[in-house]
Amino acid sequence: MTHRTEARTTPEDPAETAAALRRDRFGSLPERIRPQDTVETRPATVPDPARDTYNPDEWLIRYCG
Image 1 (cartoon, one colour):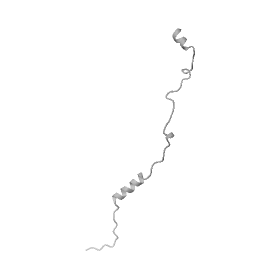
Image 2 (image 1 turned 45 degrees about the vertical axis):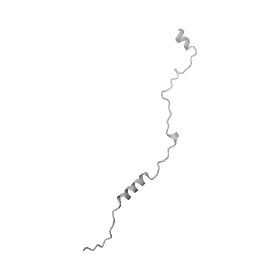
Image 3 (image 1 turned 90 degrees about the horizontal axis):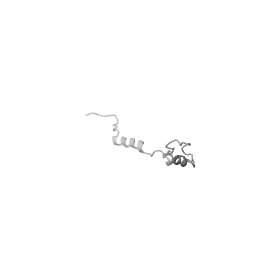
Image 4 (image 1 turned 180 degrees about the vertical axis):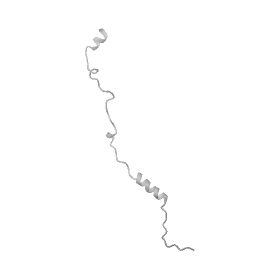
């Protein structure tokens, strides 16, 4: 028969360790993102000022000239 003088330590429960890790990782929600920060608007192409100018006589040049 052996006599133990040391206090017995129980090994940590793996389920408790896993739960603590989950709580550290997923315990709080991430920082909130505002909807206006999730959308970026910019023109699909660079506007061409020569193309968008109005010429009232253009139809004359195209069809009658």
